[in-house]
Length: 280
Image 1: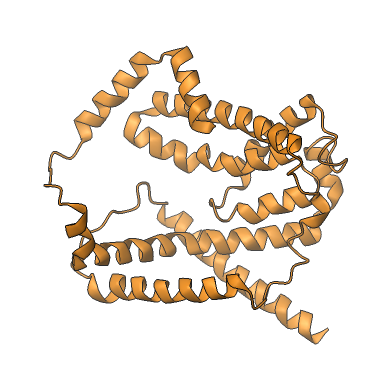
Image 2: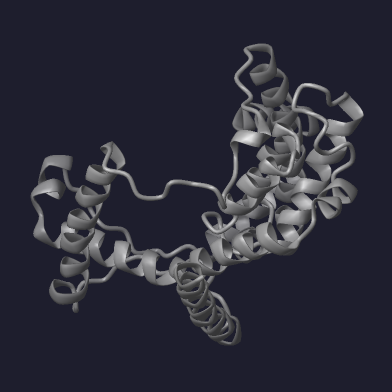
């Protein structure tokens, strides 16, 4: 739906000059080195390609572990200490039931959601527990979906687009995706409501969960850890001289250092919480 609505907006607006300028900018900075493409069966059999996968996998985890840690910790702190009245002020008519929102209320939610995501953005995965928290507090399904989709319009993505396409095109993409996610979120809300698929907020709580059970997720986690071990082994021990894709727009050293210390502080906070839980 996001893609379809974005395509319709482009057909209506017809930003030919912006697209032409963006393509010219890309052609000026494009790497002229071209490599012959190998057949898929040869790529799969290539040890070097699997080493590249391992290096990329290790790099992605190295890049996001701080964001995920801080995101989940912030969600827990907000769930424990921020009163419901705050969310009821930020998102109007919050807590009146997922089926009682009128259109203007949904519109306010899907506009405030992206603004909140822009200001609190930690990372795509780090924002998911915050989205679950918002839904548990009674924010509309549309507002929560807009909050999740908003990782498309946060400043790091804006900066990446500006680096490759220029600031004018970057702001146009921002407008395009923001409009698309607002319309998509509202349509999803009404579609899920029509099919009676929207769960009750009272069933969603990030603080009252049975986190460890011997079920299918346990065995999927074991498989995931085994696969992770293989990929990390390939990335760290077999791929010292193998090139791989770097991060498109790396964070500044100051921000990376700040996130690192925030993640360490989060682990200390969580450790103290676990100790207090079992002592008290």
